[in-house]
Length: 305
Image 1 (cartoon, rainbow, N blue to C red):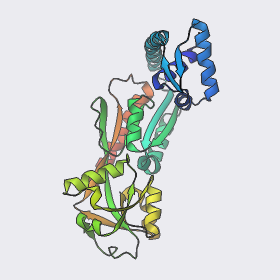
Image 2: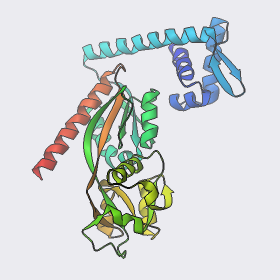
Image 3: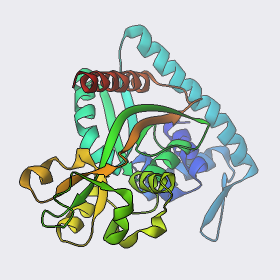
């Protein structure tokens, strides 16, 4: 029985979806279906019940799933132990990141990690912060990088970078000449917001509540799913918004947007998220160590400034 069949079965059983399993495994759906059929032929029994576009595990499927968890877990441990003995750091590391982190902070980090560990294959999946946390919970990714608080106590959350958020307006806006703007003034203008589930939106919502306000107090004119769309909308005069200062380098240099300090100031943490009990392959541990090195260096640089 091929290892690949068991890996495919385990992924389908965990996600209860052939489509999602195919996406997770970077396979076509017919290829996933073929592997499952081969496994069912091997055992001469159905492992899944398929009714009304839904699938569920049969009794035999439940048993195979339980054993596959143990078998694949032991295989990963064996592989990791042998590679540790030989000093080789190799494998596939799947990282999930929220949009802001993926677009503006992660490329440099991944590039430097790849130089240090060239045999590690990196895969990146991008979603909003809520989506990344769900991927960690479902074991679809090894490590997530998010920009909002994480409520699941079963996950390990390591706060790393601190991010400052600022108000952005067009250069000809009546607020553009101000050094800072009190939060209460935001209610006077159309506000362009990130979508539900976004880390930025969550942080802004918490910030408003901490200051006796809520999202409903804002004149929400538009919602977008990325920082780039938010900035383009503000440049077009469709409203004001709050974004990470790390996303503004190009616009401030070209003077297409004006950044204004918020009163009171608004900061948020960027965090590394992973399962507490997940067996860590060597590549995963090395990435966590590397990320913490970068965090410590960033904090030292900030202190020096």
